[in-house]
Image (cartoon, rainbow, N blue to C red; front, side, top):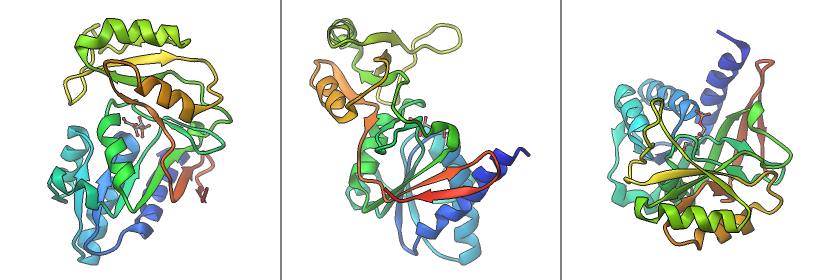
Amino acid sequence: MSKLAEATNAMARQALENVKPKFLIGLGSGSTVAVFTNALGEFVREKRIEVRVLPSSLQIQVACEAARLQLAEPSLAPYVDLTVDGADQIDKRFNMIKGGGGALFRERILLSAAKRSIILADESKFVEILDMPVPVEVHPFGRGLAEQKLRGIGGKPHLRTQNKGYPFFTENGNIILDVEFGPIEKPPELKSEIRMLPGVIEVGLFDEKIFGFYRARTDGNVDLIRP
Ligand code: 5RP
């Protein structure tokens, strides 16, 4: 196992310090959250505590089932105690790009609702300034207009596709436009601008309040960064 994989496992175990008995836990999506989900399953069995989880995607729901975690109803989202999520990029002011897995719509709800949120990410995700394409979830009927409007505000939209070129559909039945903006100086302002465009369902720019960022390092260590 690489040092980074070891650090990712260690990070997941360290992040369990935020889990308390009876907690309702929102889970984001992606490979890092999957590692945490597995660690959470072992933790609740070892400590003999009860928690319920609300996954943001079928990917993480399957991981929850494999970890034998108790699933909560989506209607309980407003009462989430702790949300644990990953990120694609994190800038020096702790703005994030998320949505690499297309789960941004539900991730937004879980991160907005939680009393406390933590982010788990490896050190390659931490950057000075956000500069990767921004995932924008769009209703398929609004694709053409959304592309035109995104170009109008300086973006270069690309329809996200799967291996053979078929469009990627989110679990909400929508498409994703990955939109190049170059370096993003003011992520919250750009988020608001994109959100106003017709056909846009959700934007992969996040500036929710985060309690702590756990960073897995290639030297095998883990840092906790409190904004
Ligand atoms: C999914 C996300 C994920 O948190 C993000 O893509 C990070 O994934 P990974 O842990 O696999 O790098 O936003 O929509």
